[in-house]
Image (cartoon, rainbow, N blue to C red; front, side, top):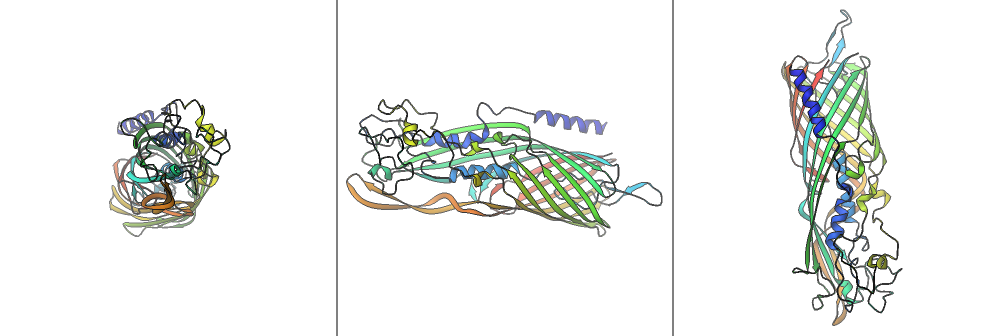
Length: 497
């Protein structure tokens, strides 16, 4: 009866996390859409210099990659968060004298690592893990309002028309000489983001022989994003000319835009093989091969869009009640994140442009249409160096305690941080080139570097009935780099046949 209730719970969890559409627009577009809405300004009256200025502060026009590269980094790390081990807690070996399978370990093993022990020929185990992950920091900057981007004005006027509108073909880079003077203004965009995932993972592990296991892990994922962007015009140049740049309404210098969305469905499937080539008490040495398939919808952040292959060396041993283990591996990735992560367009709140410039976007971008400031390198899913070390302790015949250090080093990725930047400007009444510095600029500090993510885990496995295990763990961050989760609870069930 308990076994039946267990698998009814599995079916219910799978149904709850089944496919749910994210809406008309995908989750990968959420932050780019939010940013474009937050910085897009309505046209002012036709006789104001610089019209139309809907697109003057678009990040892509200013070559500011940081907001979009941040989006890509968040998604890459969110979609590859550790799922746990697919190996069953009960492992067996064939007694050569009696021909009867016997337990090959006195403990139930780790929760987020592999051990060299195999299930045993013909043995099948099935399991379910559930984890709720909420993220609070990125590169040691709070996600709740800590990341501030500074957007420069594009160089709109080398070929400016008589009405003040830029002609097609004009440069859209940040102005170097801030001439005319109004190009010296900045827009400060401050992001506040809540990112959460709920993941139920179905595991299956089968012993093909006493030395060789195959396993499958199928995640069902729900992603929730709630974001707001508060933008402020920093009037370095237009203090006496506020009509040139304005969000309109009762707060012409500020705007807050909000976006939220969720998506649910199948994540990236994992297929795993493990071969034990050296047998010792508690395991020995084994080689593992993991293949992660891009079965999750990358446009809705349910998967990465990449095929990943990991080759690993697995050690485990058993010394009385104490059983250490160590996994070291390398992951090769082939594929890229959704290019919607970097798409930009004018915000949804843009009113009809002034008659002299019926299509302000094309006027600024020369009819080139939408695009992305991200390079192919920004969107590539990175290779990884993977390592896990820990131990399991047999507290009693029915209880195993375990702890692990889970490490991942992502190779050749953008690194971010808060830096100081200086920006030039002129005044309408004084053509002298001036400069002002800001110390809270969130930007790319290294375009290609390694990023190490460290998690600690602590857990318990309880044998509640026959070969049914109840698993409970917590994951907690041990580093401030990259996307940092809050303390994450993980619960699961494991049944061996």
